[in-house]
Structure formats: structure tokens, C-alpha cells
Length: 462
Image (cartoon, rainbow, N blue to C red):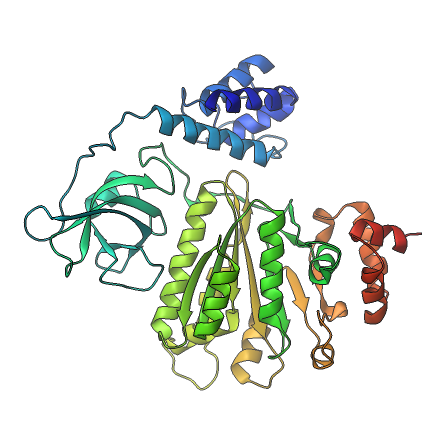
């Protein structure tokens, strides 16, 4: 299997020009990518992919490259191939790993393998094995020595051998087997904040077929690019949650992404519905009975988890239901107790949204959330006023259409994507302009009369 991966990489690399290989080499950390001939550079990249050589850290010395464009998917595949080779060629140290006993008493009689998300609670490190909520029976204490030895970060998914003396004690991590699905000894990785943000250059397709009006409309009128911040905006009762589910399902079906869903202050039935509907996604839940501190902790841990995945060159989509409840949670813990909205709460939410980015050498983190407005609530309206300029994709819903039982109840005039010319081709841009000139009933008729957006574009541009 490994040999087939290398053979496929050689074919794809050989099809690139020397300029494209140099750009790819810079992104991967190949030393002196502008020197030498094409075959020499190709050999260097293959040596990196097969684990024979290590990447070099980026340097700011010398003149900057004229272009920073490169094949991000090919770069991710090279790194994935490298992980496979390094994992395969590691000595069988995990069969009998060196253990550090951390539980109380003598070496335990309860020995098991577990995995969880690493969290620091301000005093100690733990693996949350059942999600983000503390559970004494299943959580695992982590010795700080492991964190230092393997350069672990909060949000890492760590798998290891765990031990406890008795079943009424918290288990302790005895040895680390995997970090984020790969060997814990695989090289260095970039810090999330050091990844250079760039404009969205890849479209996340949402449409799931001819009958999916939500996806087809979004793909034309409010296309979502990898690394953007998208808000679904409407008064309560217009179907924001249903629309979020449709968007998440469409993105997961059509794109190679890591889907992470955060449910803040929700009912148990909503939490169960999302968990069952997205079995292959990571769902972080903080129900309404968990308390405000649990809401903030859930959001923080989920965000750190998304950052760690982005560092691994994965495209991550974070769906938050919803951002208004998160504002209220931060507002509750604000230092200034007021009856309205303390803008320090808004600043805290902006820091969450600021994590959304498309990166030059890593993956991307896209944030999609619902935002309530227009119900006469002072805090909701103030939150919308403060956050509306943060998003670069706005999907607005019409209360009038929702009351008429029309789905999806889009407010077409207020639904848009900033800088959509970066992710739509010329034909799609022209069709988008033409579609905005139509009334809602005409748009729905055009959707019913065509199989896909390509046919719709042809019908509009005749």
C-alpha cells in the first residue's frame, strides 16, 4: 500500500511544472527549493513523503517569493503519506511502552486503552473521554511529564494505556500510544497562530441534489469558502437550526472535511437529534441544565480541538448552534454586571470567530453559526449589531416566508457572500447576478425546473 502511495505521488508531482514544484517545496519545507533541476526537487519531496528526510523550518532570510500559490491538496497528501511511512517504520515500542504510573498506590489491577481530548483545567491535565463534560468514572488524569515529552497541546486527541488501582478511582495515563491518530513521536508541527491566514480560495459545496433548494441557493447566492465565517441570521422561529443541519449535511457529503458541531444551551432532544444525524462528526454538547460555565468550557475545548486539526492540514468546519447563546454565556461572566450587553462579552466571541481562517501551510477552519435578531430582545439585537460586520457570509431568513410555511425562507436581498468572485467562476457569477433580479416565487420555480445549478445558470443566461 505504501509503495502504491509513493508511485501515485510521483505521477502527480511529475505532472507539475518546475515553478509549481518550487512553490510546493517552499510550503513543505524543502531546503533550497529554487536550486537544482526538476528531478532533484521531485526526489526531495518524495524523500520527505517517505520519511527519509525531515522538513526545514521556514526562514525569513532572502527575498520573498513572487507567488505563494501552491497545490494545497497535494501538499496535504504528501504529509499524509509521510505519516503513514513514519508510523509503519517505527520500532514496535508501543507493544511494551515505557510506563509512568500516576494513580495512587501500587501498579493497578485495572488496565485499559482509552482515548480522549486533552484539557487543562488550570491546575492539572485530563483526557475527556466522553466529550467535554467532566466524568470522574471515565476521565483520565495525565501527568504533566507526558505533555512536555510529546509536546502535547490542549485539544489534542490522545490515545494511551490507562491504569487505576480500583474502579472507584480516577484512572491515570500510563503510556501514550497515539496523538491525533498518529505516532506521538512524529516530528514537529506548526503553532496555529503562526499559520499565515489567506483569503478563501476553495468553495465548500453544499447542494446534495436537485431537490436540495437550500444547498443550491447557497452555492450560488452565498457560497461558503473554506476559512470563512458564515452567519444564519433571522428572528426566532424561522428555522435556523434546521437550516444549519441542512448546510452541515451538505458540506459533509460533498467535501473532505472534519465536521465539528457545538451545541450551546440546548435541550436534550436537540442534542440527541444532532448526535444521531451526524454520527461521523464530533458533537460537543452543553445542555441548558449544565450551567453557564459548562457552556464556555465546551466552546473553548471544541475550538482548541479544531485548531489542532487545522495544524494537521485538515479542512475543519465548526458549526455553532448558536452564537447568540454564546454571547449570553460570556455576558453572564462579564466583570461588569449590567442589564444589557457588556461589550467584553462581544470581544470574547470575536476571539472565537477570529480562529476561522484559510491558511497557507496548514488546513482551514470554517465557522458557521446562527444569530438571532429582530425579536425585540436588547441583548440579541446588540449582539447582532456588534457582530454583523465580522461575518463574510450572511444567510438571512424571512419571517414572512417562514410564517407562510415556505422552506427555505430565504431573504434573498440580504443573503450574500463577500468577495464571492474568489470562489465562483465567471458563469456562476453572472447567474448569481441574474438570480438576484428575480422574485422569490420565480427563483423557486427555476429551481424546480432544473436538475442542478449548471442547468439553472444556462437558463438564466440565455
